[in-house]
Image 1: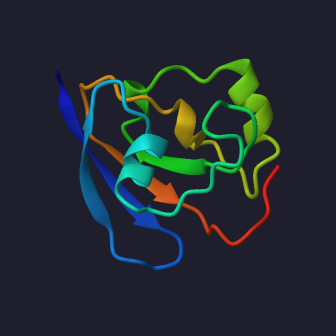
Image 2: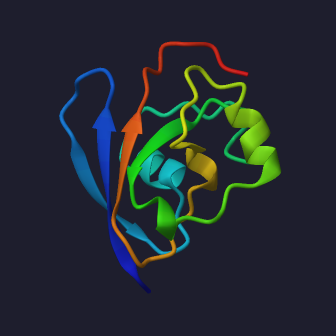
Length: 109
């Protein structure tokens, strides 16, 4: 099983956290398993936009964005070119990634 690191950065100024991720785990899985607050109203099934994150590096090692994910990102607060949904960012085990978690003090779609 391949293991990579995810560096979590936080828009609220909390200290960065570097955590291991096993191939097949999502950014949302790793966040929740390590008590990192990342909203997930739909339960992590690509049914909302609340687990919206910014991929700062390592985007090439993530699955391509689907049309469905892209539609939900359009509904997220402050979407950017590097926006993804944490539930859809599944580690492929080849490259470390850096993720910024935007403010989590909102009611999502």
